[in-house]
Length: 114
Length: 111
Image (tube, rainbow over all chains, first blue to last red):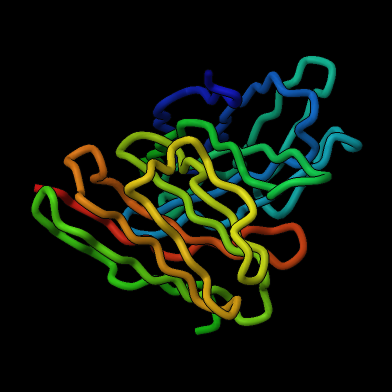
């Protein structure tokens, strides 16, 4: 059972365009939603994260939009650059007692073409 | 570099052999995680340590897998009697407050 569903699987965007990646979850106990960026041969690196008490968070060119009632969240990359070409993973975490383990989506491979 | 480090970065082994991977977390982090990532998938949780105590294990962690974190510092993940299905990237992460910081991973190929 996939707890975090991510789409699209791959995305091609022209330089300067907006990249949008969507995720949906079922577990209402999730309360922390990070996005990770992974380049080939590297480990995932935290990009931006949000908690469900806010509907949007922006850091530079990266924005998370969060819809608690729909149990959906998305990553927007404004003014996409070739250097943004990577695989992006959404994740979710259930806090409180326990390990705080992350549950990841399957990833979106983003290619930004000049 | 004070990030999470993993060794080796790549390991090729024959089916049936034992392998051991090492993770050195960020020094002030007392929480450490192991994840497994297969091609085209996101990382999947394997196990969690708080200091030296292994507090949680995933059902993915079969009895051929064992992890340790002696003295609450570095951690090792051992796979006994490797199978081709064990081929994957093994990622270590450590956590201070909210954020899990990942190492570069060890890519295991079982022939």
